[in-house]
Image 1: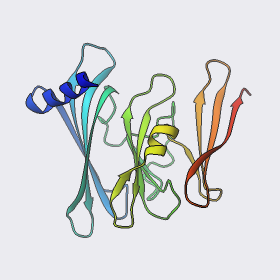
Image 2 (image 1 turned 45 degrees about the vertical axis):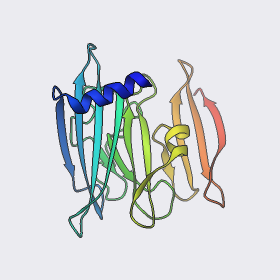
Image 3 (image 1 turned 90 degrees about the horizontal axis):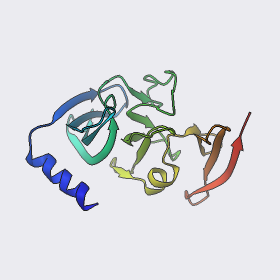
Image 4 (image 1 turned 90 degrees about the vertical axis):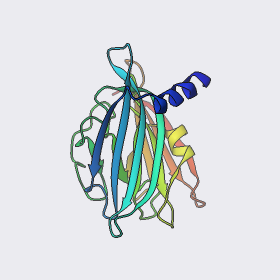
Length: 202
């Protein structure tokens, strides 16, 4: 942990980085999302260490309402490089694009807690065999996006969303024998719980 924090400090001090910027105006009816990614090339073929910065602007006022920043020690070279690799289940942008290897896109806008507000998920680490790991941010009544610990650290992978049943379902590989299906549901207090877990081999 100390080593990674030292790396983050060096990131801001040094200028030997490769930065990418994408401005997304079609993901949300109310917000624009601007992603800036600084990369430090590692001595590996497949991945970089990065600092990801997400600036969220209010479309009506034109003002920046929030900035979210985090570090990632393992991102494949192509993550955040293609600005079109995003998805919105709110506006429909790229929502019909085929999902490969559990990768729904670098940044995805959707309503994860079924309250009618736009939330978003963003890749925090590139997965090896199960797909990328996502951090989830839930919009508050005040229009601020808060990190959701349960979604980000328990559900982890991007889920299939069933608004009618108020469930989120993830599918992850179980070696060569099939996939694990996990279904999470909100209770009456809007708390999440795992309600089903099974191995699918067909």
